[in-house]
Image 1: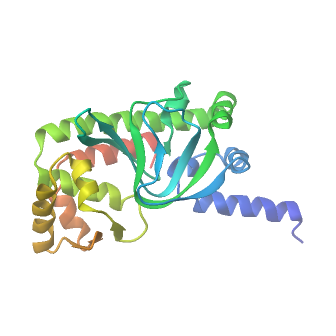
Image 2 (image 1 turned 90 degrees about the vertical axis):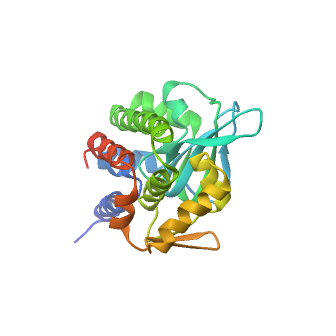
Length: 246
């Protein structure tokens, strides 16, 4: 006959196995169970700002679905995405290095949900729990690789190729084949004018790779989308698989 403790262990094991955040799912069950006590489930609404430039980072967010964008801006009002964070990691990376600010804004550009944890609790846990620290450091390396590849991508590849790459990265971070995405946000992500987004998305629609209606993207042909993306998508995808052992 199963005891209450057996039921609890089975419940934790089931939650661990079905955990959407890949960083957390890769932790030993005991470490995952320890983190659950300090997590709070939160919704990530479209356009919500999680971190403001040069402001104190009060929490970390382990994304379970959706996409957060790290955006750099200049004094003239121009903006471009410098990194994206989804279910492979967490928002609040500077805290891992004992820093509580960053010069970038982080906001939600594809809505979803996450586990939220207070910054002071996170710092204590990564100091005390080697397995958690190790896993978070691997994500930090992946994010660094992603940012470096994005710099090269923005310099070397066409808007059409970069658009396909960005759509693939977003598709990887949501459930199903549909997600909300405005022209305005995609222009910031790609660092181009909205007219350039219209042209790039128009090509993909005519070739029946995606549909794009009223700010909603539907991926119709994943293989075709991959064939239209630059090699940067494969490089960052492979880096993630290598660092997380997938």
